[in-house]
Length: 275
Image 1 (cartoon, rainbow, N blue to C red):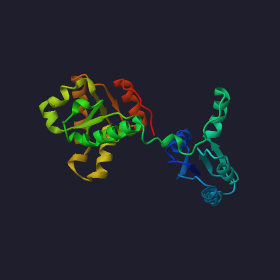
Image 2: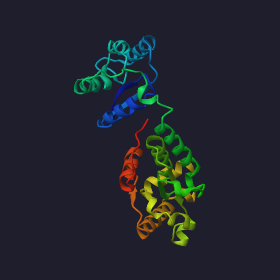
Image 3: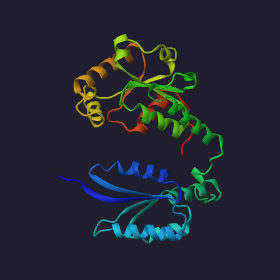
Image 4: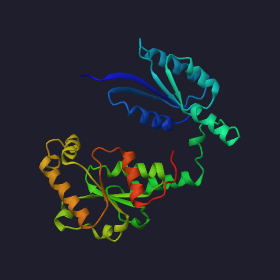
């Protein structure tokens, strides 16, 4: 039986990251529906809002209104979207009003406030973390490894790089990562540079079947992608993590957000906010 489809729009006066994250979290609860998603950022004028309303109305069909998630601060802009043929779910309106009532003060209603503080220390720390993570991706460098907040280890294509970048960009965590390779398995030990920093290590593993699927997309028909090789590498990697008492997580069915949250919790890293 094929899944039903529904259009969903994420509309923001800023980057759209916040509203897409919130909206996507809600939509994932409806597994039987396939959502065709459109993100429209920087809607900071009524003219742009009218263009959005035109797109929304064009997507409406009989008995199936588009779902529209917004974080629009300006009431006039929001009202233009509200008049479109849709179900409007406005996060700011839903949460700012009770917050204003509880705090006894009006919010600033400033457009782009959540992403506009590019000069503050938190923002600079995140940029520094991204630069560090890029320089220490895939075991490229052991230089300044003592500055790493966490070092992710695991077989190639187990999710180390996207998790590292997410930790850096979203939380300002300096995350290095190192791929476990046949030479490590033959030696039966991690490289000395990693063993010296064992308290910062966190392992990622993955099911051999999913690993083979991912690798076939990269190198179809290769020994690297064969299910036999994938089983061998995963078994060796997990054995090495147990031997060195490295905490680890299976990434097969988890999102990057879930993996990152688990890493932060297990390694006891402080969250520094996010974009």
